[in-house]
Length: 112
Image: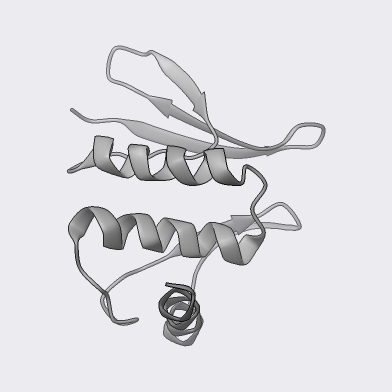
């Protein structure tokens, strides 16, 4: 099934994430996934969000990478994945550099 995810930053409510299915139904999320192993990733994210619903920027990026590693049961090298971010304080989409991804991967491995 094909889905679209739309991210926006509202001046009053902050970041908003919606997932829209082909029938036009849309749902708001704090974190979500789409594609292969979607439900496993959503379960991982829901568990993490239940433990701590207010993430810092670094925790958010590291949780997303950890979700991907968990559902695919694979440890990544920084050159093997792409990470895109949008921040409320800088609402321009950008891809993280390999060095930034490496820092997050190191933090994840040290934490685990």
